[in-house]
Amino acid sequence: MREDKKLESLLKGIFKVLEITPSDPSREHTRIWDLVARNLSYLGHAKQAVGLLEHVVKVRETTLAEAHPDRLTSQHALAGAYRANGQTKE
Image (cartoon, rainbow, N blue to C red; front, top):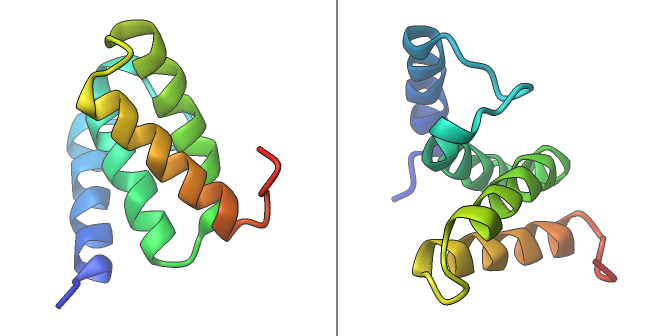
């Protein structure tokens, strides 16, 4: 059973402790932004998820090897978010 609302609440606590915000995603917290974006997708907030996932993919394209699993996984998640947001040409 998924507990996306609970995860959303926990992430807000992490934001507070780290003094970070999704509107200004830093490179050093890419793993957190990836988790936030996936959670947004699961909660039906595709537009917000797309924005964060585009950032995550950009960072990972410049920091990870082309075949790195994290890079490929975030690209796949972005494709799914594009589809959910009706952006099938992207």
